[in-house]
Length: 130
Length: 288
Image (tube, rainbow over all chains, first blue to last red; front, side, top):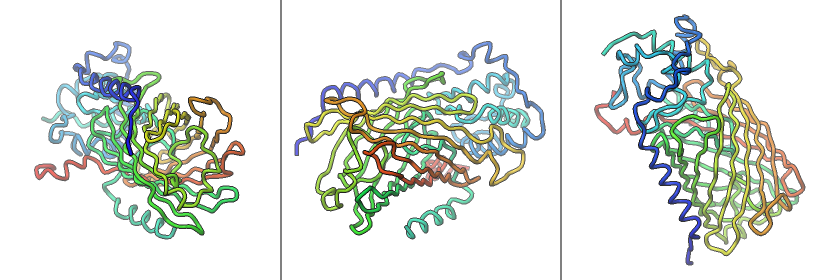
């Protein structure tokens, strides 16, 4: 049986793949953080309960890539470097919301905001280690 | 049904400790969240219903979803069904790809969806409703249904927003039968959901609110190119509830109620899904 694919479908498929490949042209994520986002502060920073809850969320969602100790695994980054530990909470929050799709970091916008702040509190509580 | 339950409990047992899934409680609607790169999610979806003047059926769809990139998810579906007083048949496969064309999170986030389907007319997976599909299609015997295989291209525009813990997703569906001269068929799906708790607790818990999400789905057909609209189409609406078992799979349940005479009265839907994180690392000897 002969299968014919309409020209319109082929054009749409091509456009889809083209649009998808354009997303490879991203830059360093920090450049994209707006000042208003950078200025946001973590409402649960330093709180013991939030750090404990963030640790659980980190284990569920982040540890497989970044390691249980957050020191990174294979080509996934260490989260205890100066760059991350000195980053503003608002910058990390922006990254969790948007991800860095080109670099393989997915968006975590599906996690509610309070949960994302808990993860940040946990990561910051780990301190530097390289 | 007994075999299915056995499979589910086996999966729960097998998954303890290294499987996890956290997702919206939808069956038909897609949100813009893609599979994390390197993760493989396995889903078993069951659909059960009794069409008027027809036999009770149990449709089973097994889905393998892989995060190829952070912006690209690819999935393979295998479908089969059992109809009481009839038989058990394999229905075919679907290959689906979803792409995020924009790199950032916006108020509304588009995802482009392309799927190739090769399924016969005995399919009862209810993964979407398009065109003029109606309850009368479900009265075909399995022998009649499996005698005709439909190869089709399905496109979806997925629009979705995450805000204040809520997800609101709208899907616009266009489907073209590739081996017959049928016109493009259209459909829609809309979903709204929210976790029952926005923040996690400090201590691990099983039946606490943070592990549940609830919502509702509405989906149906919009006719075809020759007759776009609601005439002679079927529509369903239902609440949905998902339970994310800590360090385990997600179990989702939804009763979907038919909204007009072209729809079935009730369709019961169950889903078990679990995610194997970073599956490729299993094959690297140097992985920690």
